[in-house]
Length: 245
Image (cartoon, rainbow, N blue to C red; front, top):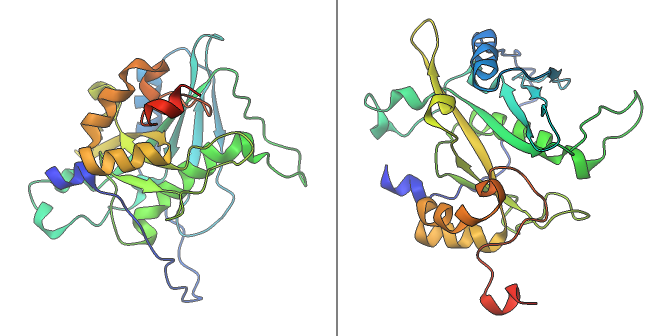
């Protein structure tokens, strides 16, 4: 389990068979929604329904910021439809890590309004939504798994998620408070809720060398510990001379 803290996941595109796969939906949708509403009460909730109609339906739920000083909570409902493929040595002791969903936090001024039919999405605003859906499908497409401390760069070239607004180009899976980040369903299944921590290239390199806990310590001094997604937040792993520029 110690190596998970430094693990970076790369992948090749899966082979396409051309066969249409059945669409899977999670049986835990209502329980996930009730859990999140308990954790973040008195918020208006919207749902961005998955329109891809592929093998895994991943809807994005938005619990809107109640004030301008607060944050939006976005979470997936669908990743837990299938168990992730854990390493063989994880069974049976860590089998409870098989089911997961994802969370990200956006500042209150982040306006996620769906465009009218026929209009394109503004990537500057929508890349966090795309990232949530991509990562929710990732372990099922690649017969792999995601867990705390995993780092997923946006390609091996560290391409920014949106060249107009940010240099963030990868993500580490972290967690919010324990009461939020896991709960048991009525049938006894543990649902793990991992929070996305978007990173700069230098931060991913530092994390790979020093581990996730060391990176989180460096991020303790920035707004929201990096958990609230500010596209221009300080890069905590820049060399000192670059920080002063």
